[in-house]
Image (cartoon, rainbow, N blue to C red; front, side, top):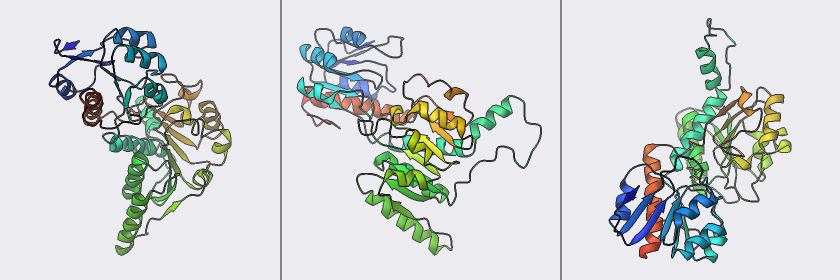
Length: 348
Ligand code: DGY
């Protein structure tokens, strides 16, 4: 699909993206926009090389693609200077290789913060209250009357929410769980989440002033403290060498037997084989997963686990957010091509 065929700058999007605002932004600024409508979901390096061709100024790519030296040097040879992921995470991008080839890398933070936090909150509830399991039970025609012990789950109010990685998304999630369900907070982050701490303090005072039990917060000295103490734990780190398999057999073992673990960050943060084993051995332990180690696949056994709620990497999937991500990705590429500020750019 081609927009503004006579545009001076050739910008490729490796996927159709929601909305048309991003296309207009580019075409209004003398860009020819080419959108790859290839049916296969994940494009290979070879597919993208063919798209780049011999003249290309910038590319908007997706988190499923492997952006390393091969693609960045091809983009450089084609006269390109700009690449943006349509995602906040950029673990699929070799930023050093981009820098070496003089390509600016962009990502799309901000517009997906609340959306992602909302999904983490949804998965927390779905897992704690066994919503998917109960839904399947209903649809299978198994419900034959109310029972005192039918699908008994965990009450969140007054329990402790644990956040590992209290950046933008982790903090937004924490606020939702604290304000929505009056949970206490324990978090682990290399940086102090000052605004989050202030929020919990103020909210605790508000509750107290209204005769309610105040909520509390604690910044944990170690991640293990969060794992040991929290009832619901949500993972929000970036994926890099230091967070790969952060949650493994040993760390699962120190969590409460009835804890809920949520992952909306990146699949490889959790050792999925260890997780399946843990779910099998601990039926009261529950997980809500948006991301998987080898997407689009799940490790053997996970799909059969009743104590797992699994969704296909949809944390940022609201119309507003996805249109915003597309727009920011376009602005990143346009910024570099035209010499305007790049919205967000970790390298050049
Ligand atoms: C991201 O942006 O990194 C998400 O995984 C997709 O929204």
